[in-house]
Length: 563
Ligand code: GLY
Image 1 (tube, protein in one colour):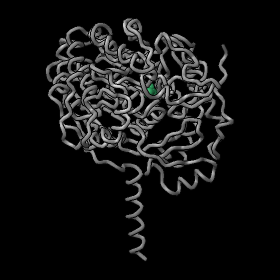
Image 2 (image 1 turned 180 degrees about the vertical axis):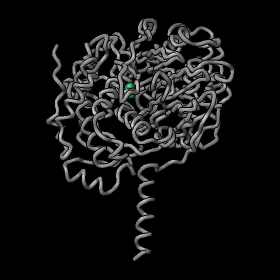
Image 3 (image 1 turned 45 degrees about the horizontal axis):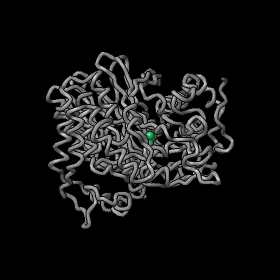
Image 4 (image 1 turned 135 degrees about the vertical axis):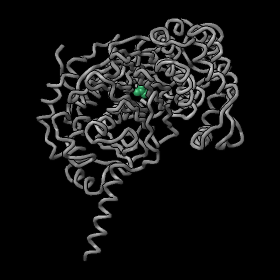
């Protein structure tokens, strides 16, 4: 009998550990001077090299961004876009929008057939799926405002990685092989990644055309991309398919500094990305919605914690579908959506005893969307300057089109628009007028690069890829640290769940919830679907002693480095 009790207690302890800290293959890393967490070990190395040369967090971010375009082709990019959130050592904040935009010739119904039904593949694959890229303009804009080292020094590591090649990881070899048929279909003239024999771990991947494009960028800045030889190659690539990006679209592209979303959660200042990302607004609204619940007492991934978080997610994703889009084209009711009283009053009327039916949840009436393959990195330098940057070409390998002669992939970001009201995008996200296609408009994003401070000091630098799940993964990671006392590594390794209003179900990673919680939730009307990995979060937490605790997500090749 005694022995049975002992076995039961040990089983319970092991189970608790499994649900709280499962899949923790990475060691907790701590650094004194600077930390860089990215999706690829070589990109993290580049970041640390720049920091050690005396560069600041923005210098390192620019060098990492270009390096990722080489070593992480499925999401790191020249042919995509992204968002950067910055906090300087003295507390000054900024956010930079280098999101792709619709070409001037784009129009509302461009992906519909004669009957008005979406032709899904058109917004996902091939030249017509591409928005005007923003990455190079974004990096130059960040450079002009904050960088300290010469521009060409920041581009050089990427040039070397592309021209000399690098050894691919096992995960990359698997992915390169998996997509060969698609790559061949959309690139009849070939591309560096295309070959007849299988890719294996350790094979050297050289990208000479990409190295030449990077050399033009190193020599001429944005003009090396939006004008001259690179622009000619992009426009020629458009003509090979049904693409519509013109020289004028490229020349006219501008990265835009915007006011970050700022709000508070239990005294922590949360700084995140404003529209055209839905990320900052949705994250802030989620934190406000759960602020009055005793999450810490309820515990990580407990029945009650999941109910409170899911009911908040359901309501905020409904608002996202109606109210969020490019703020230069649509008046997004930002203040109302991140009004703490509004979000808390709304949640106070929600019963956690039973699942609300998503059909009964409508977007709020105020007076008056994404791919799994995006990538995020977090950097803090020796002075405490911080960069949180998420970048994307939307789907894994974007539109599958490499610009012939220029060696980089084009995004398929046009699918992040609402192609037709009520018709889901590749992530099942819905949208309406706010996110309808219009010439020169930026498509709504969920990317949520975020920085948190406490009492005027830097506390956390966090973000993730994951399409529609980005917002909820950042939300959970923040709560993992602030409520459930996890380390940076534990906060990113912990398993995750996600609800986005419609489809009305909780998506869960394999070990995210225990059997009793699952049964309890299902009894009360929640639909639960197991799925693969959710997100790849990179998190840096500043400890009270000033050390930088860095957590890299074990779900990929993600690596934390520092010194
Ligand atoms: N394409 C993913 C996002 O922008 O949210």
